[in-house]
Length: 90
Image 1 (tube, rainbow, N blue to C red):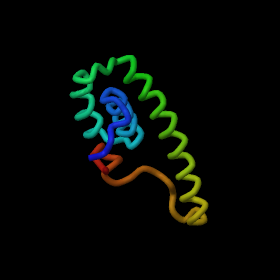
Image 2 (image 1 turned 120 degrees about the horizontal axis):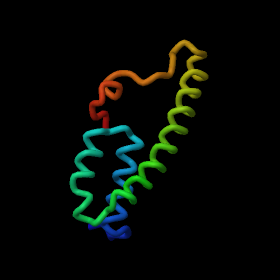
Image 3 (image 1 turned 135 degrees about the vertical axis):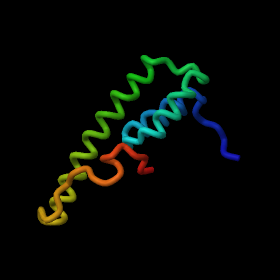
Image 4 (image 1 turned 180 degrees about the vertical axis):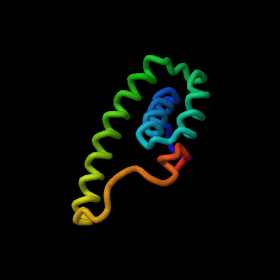
């Protein structure tokens, strides 16, 4: 068994942020439904989401530039497939 390093509330907040950054609606909704069990407040969740959104915006921009550079512009870097339809792509 792995040693617990983070408390359950911190684990939940990290998981919510990761789900938001990954744009996984299913994961976020499932986690949010149980966040109150670890006393995560809406203010804490909003703070985590602000960080997750900044990370996601930067990473998507960097990846888009990488895709276009790597393909010499032949492959446009835009969201498509199941992620665009709001389905879980984890």
